Image 1 (cartoon, rainbow over the protein chains, first blue to last red):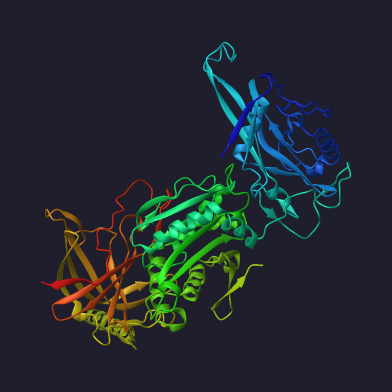
Image 2: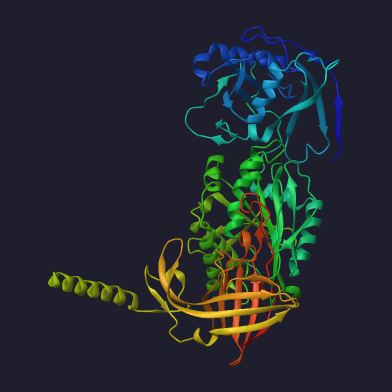
Length: 441
Length: 192
């Protein structure tokens, strides 16, 4: 990854008054802003303040930032109460309407707290060469001076150090939603009254130019056709054939892949997941080639940490887990059947949080999972090698039954398979409990 | 007082009788699928398939000496996520020593909550007993063990472990995640 860092602008030194609620806009952020959009949004806000205002504090419009967008599309403005940024009001435009919603991301609040109240600060522009890979995210960073001695806070002469504050805004997250985006960045509601306000600048009835929204099939296609991902999958696939240590790799929110790392015998530790949207690991040896109860449960804390972390996955649906494995198969080419599955969660952040915090009795769930594996393998339709291990139909059935036992709504979980030619299918559950692979277009 | 005492004893016997009758009603074969086991039923070793495995067995694998202590337990309570029942099972405790005689892992004389091995069903097509191993710390190594009686003094052992994704949430700290049980196929154990 090539990261170009350039410092520009002189150091800002200012003292903030405790209130900045003026209706006259003066740009006090560290960046060039889309002032037309900010002024138009301010006009709508002041005309409808009683209706829009849903949180304590006053928007400090002079510190609003359009995060490097200049097509009258988006802004975020800090809301201040008692000299503290208490929330961030985000205002995206969709067509001719704008939408106000309050957010409480700690990273955003920290960013604006330092921006509004920091005495010595300087902008840093960051250009990330891979940023536009699949998700359109913009990062805005500035440096703030932390004096070691408050009596001499001047970075020119006093001791201290520079820290940074960053905000990340992802367009897909903001503009896929047809209703309200809640404080977790999740699209909620739908139907009912449109909560938008007419944008005085007009605006096109059609949404601004955006990367097309990707469905789960397209999301997986982007990943599975990435040469780096393909190479690493092939590598861990070879490892899956051996009864040795486990291997895996991570895919970050910006699409970059980590190196393949080796775990231990029967386990793999992916490490920090905060900037990671996807994980792949191999199921070595003769285990069940689908997601076990702990595999399924682990997806949910991963969703929480990734979606709420800068540089992580932009939406819940972007977090995924993949496995590759193999099983002996008398009727398969090379005597092996390969398994390659991906899971995603199609619910909201709230639902993911609930599942994440559920205290499952894994001892029972795992034992039942294995016992069910042994029951199904005794049925010929679920085993293609004389009852040695489950075939794809068998592991898929076991997966959906496991969701039932974990009380996870099956229609909220997306299970996809990828065959050896890279063809992706969505695995659908039939009413009789069997499964069907529906090829992605 | 005496009459009251007799009454108490009488009702106690009646109650025990009812419970016993309930537990003994319509025992089901070992391989009854979980979905077909009624609440509180008894899944019994009707064909006495488990008893021949009872005993103490030894094998050597990669320089380690493995001793298995296999016992049979009848009417053991089994709790699933949505029901409970009783069943006959084999319990396997073990002791693993390295070539220097140092004990690497032992469940025979310990109260460790991990490393439990209990039979779940049989595999008629191969004549094996299937046992579930809960794994060591953080569940690492959880999976199935297959035992097959070869003759009066020998059994074979096959162990297939499942994968475990370790995270700070599900496996805090850095516990020993080494699986000491032999992960191999068809290892021969000899009865002591």
